[in-house]
Every structure is written in C-alpha cells, then in structure tokens.
Image (cartoon, rainbow, N blue to C red; front, side, top):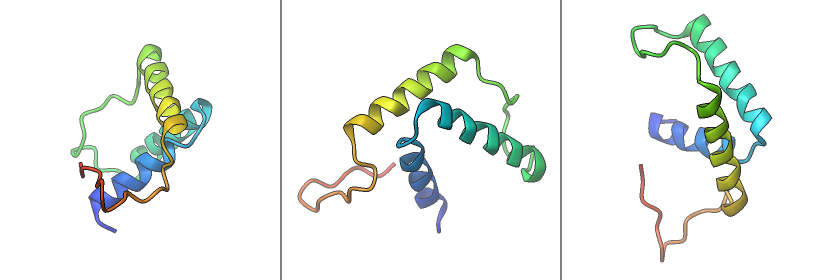
Length: 82
C-alpha cells in the first residue's frame, strides 16, 4: 500500500472514532514511533496541548457525523486527492 493510500485509510478510519478513541490512537502511534520510528524523520516533542487535542477530536467527530468514510467517491463528482 503506498504512503498516500495509507494516510487516506488512516485518516478515514480515525474520523469514525469517538474522541476518547482518537486519543488512544494518538497515544499508540506515539508509542510505536518511540519504539520503532526514525527520530530524524520528524520534529515533534510528543505532546499536544489540551486545546489542540480537543480541537482535533471535535473536528474528527464532526467529520465522522457528516461523511461516510467508507463511501466510494462517485465518478460524477470525484473527490480531490490530497
């Protein structure tokens, strides 16, 4: 699976989770990064301010409530790729 597709699957999957489960995903990803990641690839201190985490969780929750993350884009109205 290429990196772009992996990112899309991960984003869509996280968007379906309740806020407390989003935090678990973040915590697990940070754990994996500490154990197996290449620290030269990212510059991140491993913490999110509470305000940022709440805003992210709220955004994910709102998106999950307005979109079906598993719905395939129609060929008549294709979604832009990021």
